[in-house]
Amino acid sequence: MIFDSTDIEILRKSLDTLAKGFSNLPDFSSEHDRTSLDSVLNETAKKMHENFPYHHPLYAGQMLKPPHPIARLAYAMSMCLNPNNHALDGGIASSAMEKECITQLGSMFGWEASLGHICSGGTMANLEALWVANRIHPDKKIVASEQTHYTHERISDVLSLKFDKAAVSPNGRMDIDSLKYLLSKGNVGTVVVTLGTTGVGAVDPLSEILDIREKYNFRIHVDAAYGGYFHIASELQTDARRAFDRIHEVDSIVIDPHKHGLQPYGCGCVLFRDSKVSALYKHDSPYTYFSSDDLHLGEISLECSRAGSAAVALWATQKMLPMNPGGEFAQSLDKCLLAARALWQQLDESDFYKCLMLPETDIVVYAANSDDVANSSRKAREIFTHAAKQHLHLALIELPTDMVRNYWPNLDGDDPTITCLRSCLMKSEHLDWVEKIYSILESSAKL
Image (tube, rainbow, N blue to C red; front, side, top):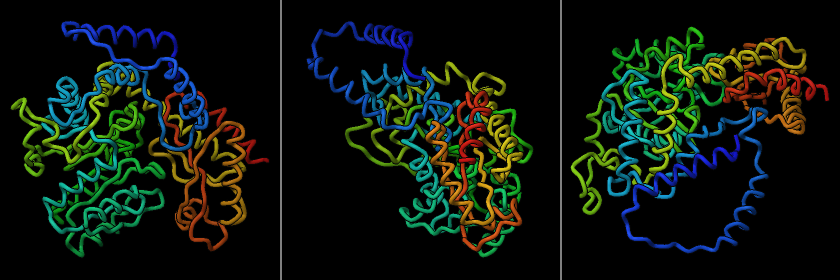
């Protein structure tokens, strides 16, 4: 996934095309020391060697996925202008591209007239969704599951919102009985439903939550920052498919194109089903929105300056890889799902590991087989280290021991949490590397 000479030539041609669009302007020169540029850029490249190989299939740790070449090239080309998508003055073309991208993302979820925009990431996108939720249901509580991303609790604190957690079932999904109990106490304005938790990849039971919404009168915000694109996949299992099939009924959705959308950081996105929430963003700016009566994206965003190049890269990617079920992009997501299931099945037959929940997305969670919690945690950390020495990079996750005991009833020990191993198989190439990954895991457990 590193630039090759063909990529560089394609970029050069696109830069020539870009330059032609401004050829009527008077010439000017921008001087810089190319000798220093060459030296410092190469030094910078060497510094980057200190990273893990995020682009390689043997990196199966955190949720890091390399941008598609079209996204990298479009972003690099656009950076020659460095547009700012806050107001049309700073990003006429890139703002139009962003609006088109938002329409396409909304359509993917079954919304034809949604409101939304690109954010710097999922954290900012979720902040906006909860801010809107509080404006609609002021002073009411936000409820999310114990496995929801930690930023929801932190965002609620930033916004001075009341926050509560529903318990989860052994598979990591929000427990409906626990949610009903919290709802029965009253004063809940919004329930955050996660379709693809970042810890174990669980898909909350959205269909069941929708069925009780009318009784308790709450908004539903879906955090699909990680899992949203799986909506168009064909390899989802039954429960996850049921949840995604009703996503169009919720009030707001967050999705991160810089995860499964093949984009560079930072490119998150927030979408609202009801475009009338735009009135909540209304503000004055005496020198910003003067150039056009058309919508300036800053008028529907809490962020001000935003990278127009992120919109350019996303537009180019969606142009090249449309988000159609059964298309090339959707097929790449299916490979991730299949890779996770294949690795889980192999580990489930191993003497060295105890598999936990069957993957609903492309995250595999498993424990090191041992006689008690403390030893299992220690062995997991050792396997993590030994695998890295063989160039397989994993992640660790702390889970409640009681959750793990549902899959491992005879696990001894009274430690409240257990350290498990976690593999994110986010790259479509991972499907071809399952055997190699499993082989390294087996050899690492024997050391």
